[in-house]
Length: 166
Image (cartoon, rainbow, N blue to C red; front, side):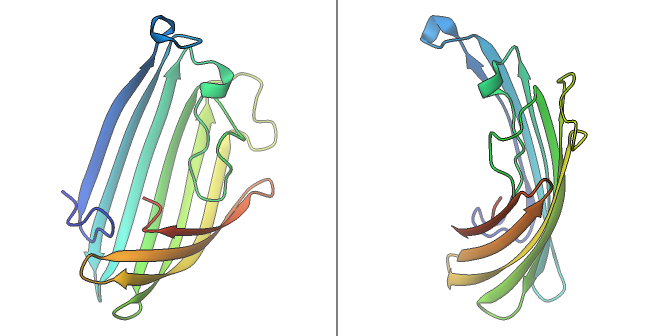
């Protein structure tokens, strides 16, 4: 029910899916990956938007390289793996005028289902960050975004992208 796919100001989005990998179809292993992605957007005072995302990625019998990874800004995908991953993020999108804005975000991911892993992080991976954005095409609500994200274990990133992270 989002009002815009690229720059939503209200509504929600839900995607639930299953990817079935099968040796009989040319794969090297047979396993399943289940994903559920829920996002909500609430417009408040002065054109600001509060956004939330709850994401789950679960696998069954997946080989190590196909297991879920931390899906948060500031972390390299594939660096940390486990059979299951759940994350929760919140983001405040501030309007600083007709074309400029700022973003502030925080989130945490949890990897679980692996025994003896996660000695230093205990399976939890928090992130915090901020950025600025510029609306390139106001009518289409298209923007370019520059963000800095910081996680644990020296994970950090400077990100430039068209649109928001999600």
